[in-house]
Length: 201
Image 1 (tube, rainbow, N blue to C red):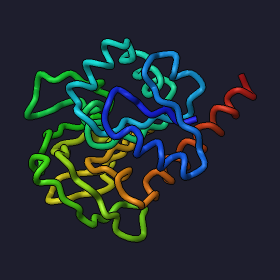
Image 2: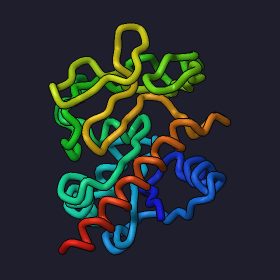
Image 3: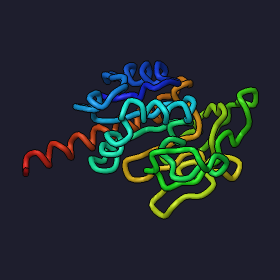
Image 4: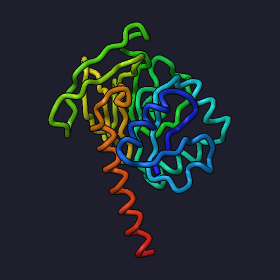
């Protein structure tokens, strides 16, 4: 079961894409929804509203436990990347979960009216991915544990750190399922590792 953080934002689009790949989803709105999940999606939306709602629903610490302690696989898109980042350069007072060792700029490519699609090269994919950028953040600095998977205009727009993959763009708004397929492969490996640990515990 894949949990989709459902404070607000592009929830249905991720839901439809995961379900089209034959996997069940659950909208995560409170801590008990994290039980029995094998992966988490942080969708796009409005990051300041999302962090306020996460605090109001007391989800901050349970999410940190799932991601940092249990190492549950995560896919974060656009505002989801902002929520996980350690530093937001142009909004330094904005709170975040601080789990992804990156610095970024919000709305780095312009406002809603400046939205665009661009074919980008992503490590591990044979063909370019037609990425949709909508008020997208851009990664300006990253720590040693962070691997850059894609660049655009000298900014990192897709990164990986341990169990977290985060991208500036919206793969759920395309018909290309490759990023979600890769996420589900990571989920399957994590599930298998949990089964192995249970056998020897």
